[in-house]
Image (cartoon, rainbow, N blue to C red; front, side, top):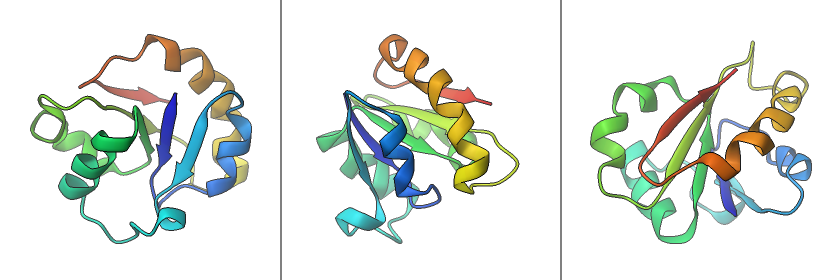
Amino acid sequence: MRILLDENLDWRLGRELPGHEVCSVPLIGWAGTKNGALIDRASRQFDVLITMDNAMAHDRRRLLEGLPLAVVALRAPSNRLADTRHLMPKLLALLPTLTAGTFSVLG
């Protein structure tokens, strides 16, 4: 699966997702891209976007409608690697069940 980590997540989380192609928004030069544009771009190259952006949850229907992308919002005390790393086994279990155009919360 092709996974994109939003800029609010540590790129090193990708190491916790073996068997998947994982990129990070800042590392591919998309830092600062607004949510709508980010989802549009991501939907052309990725299967899943992982974020901690609460604003995306409020706009999820408008942002995802008709796009071949699933979004997963992580809920943790902070976006620090130490706080998000423990969610990766749950994410690995969730990934095969995701379908395009869906928004999931994982915490």
